[in-house]
Amino acid sequence: MDPEDEKLVTLARAARARNGAAEGAAVRDDTGRTYAAATVALESLSLSALQAAVAAAVSSGVQQLEGAAVVTEADVVAGDDARVLAELGVDAAIVADPAGKVRG
Image 1 (cartoon, helix red, strand yellow):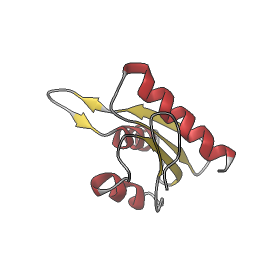
Image 2: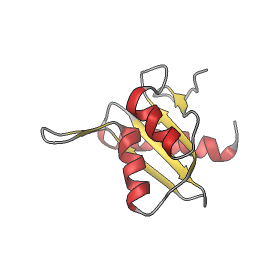
Image 3: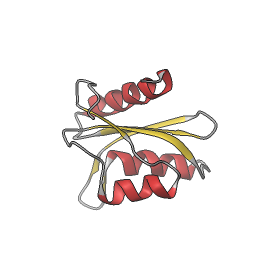
């Protein structure tokens, strides 16, 4: 795996571990800046870790992503998470288990 992609997995793992969230995610924009986040689970707001990381990037002015990683128990990124990545130019996210082992 590319060192920049390894960095995304490390950042996603750290975001997840900070508060024991279900998932952690990190994205890299087209200038190399990274954004990391964990799952948001409030009564009034629910975001997957990937949605939260993308929201942080987009709120900073990002219009294009070049990479994404998600640390999760799930096997794939699908649904709304996959659609938001596609909208910003990423075909697929790297999916890793909580120990950082990349799946697929």
